[in-house]
Image (tube, rainbow, N blue to C red; front, side, top):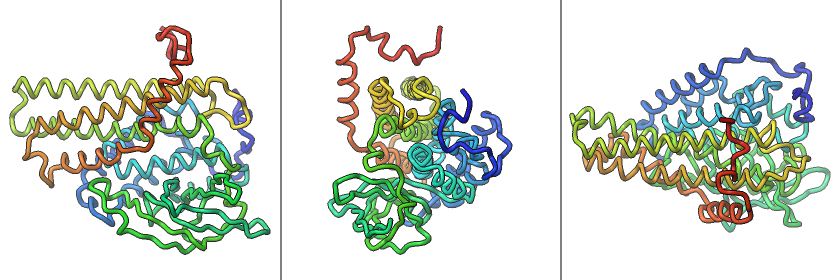
Length: 410
C-alpha cells in the first residue's frame, strides 16, 4: 500500500529532515546497550527526586525519541506503523530490563506520539513531530482523583484548565504531556500542555512509593493554565475509542516482561556467584522462570501479529469501520493478563532462589522486585479479564480458530 493512502497528514518530505534508517538489528542493539547502562545506574537514581535523565539523553542520541514518528516524518514508525509493532515491543522489553522507571516513561512517550498521529490535525502532527526532533519528551497524564482536570472554554478558541492529575510520570522532564480533562458538557477532551510555557503546582510529596521511585510520578495542579484550540487533540471522547485504548496495553506489558527478564538475570548471576548452580531445586526454579519468560515472548509475538493483521497503522484509521475491533481488544487483554501473571510467578521463584541475602540492598533484585510489583498494579485488571471472556463467549467458532487469521501460515 502506498504511504499516501495511510493517513491524511502525509507530506512530500519537505518539512522535516529524513534520517538514514538503521537496521532492526542495530535498533535492538542500541536499546540493549542503553538498557545495560540503565541497569548499572539504576541504584544511584532509586530515590524520591531521582530520574533517568542521562538514560533519556542516550535514547535521544540513538534516535529512539523520534522513532515513534511515521517514517515520512523522519521516524521509524515504532508504535504507529503496524509492521513495526514487533520491533517496538522488543525495544520496550529491553528498556524495561534496564530500568522499569525508564521503561514506564518511555512507553508513555510512545503512547503520546501514537495518539497524536492518530487523532491530531495535519498541522498538529507537523508541529509535534518537530518537538520530537528537538528531543522533547512526551507523555500521557490521564490519571486523576476527585479533584480531576476540567476544561473551561473562555471564548475565542481559548480554554482554561482547573484541577489536578496524579501519577504524572516523568514530571519535571516530560515537556509535552497529554493532560486530558472534562468539558462542561461532559466530553473527555485530549489536550497537550507545553510545560515550559506554563506555571503549575507540583506536589512531589504525594509520590511516596515502595517502588518506581525514579519515575517521578508526582501530582500536578494545572489550575489556571490557559490553552488554545491548537493544543486540543481530536474530538471529545477520542481517548476512549477502541481499539486504540485497549490495544496499547501490550506496550506496558512488554516493559513489565523486561523487568521479569532482569529478575531472571539477577537471580542466575547470584546463584552462579555463590556456586549453587548444581542444586536440583535451584535448577528447577530457574527452569520454571525460563519457561515463563519464553511464554511472555510468545505473547508479545502474538500481540504484534494481531495488530499487524488489523490494519497498516496501529488500531487502523479513525474514520474507517473495523469489525475486528473486539477480537483485537480481547487479544490485547489476554497479553496484558498473561504477562502480569508471568511476572507474578517469576517474583516468588526468584525470592526462593536467593533467600534473604539476595533481597537486601544494594543487591539489584531488591529494587527490581519493588519496581515490578508496583508497576504490575495497572488499573482495571478484572475488567480486562472479563473482556476476554465476553469476546470468546460471543463466538461460535472452535477455540483453535478464535485468533487464527492473524497467525503466520504453517
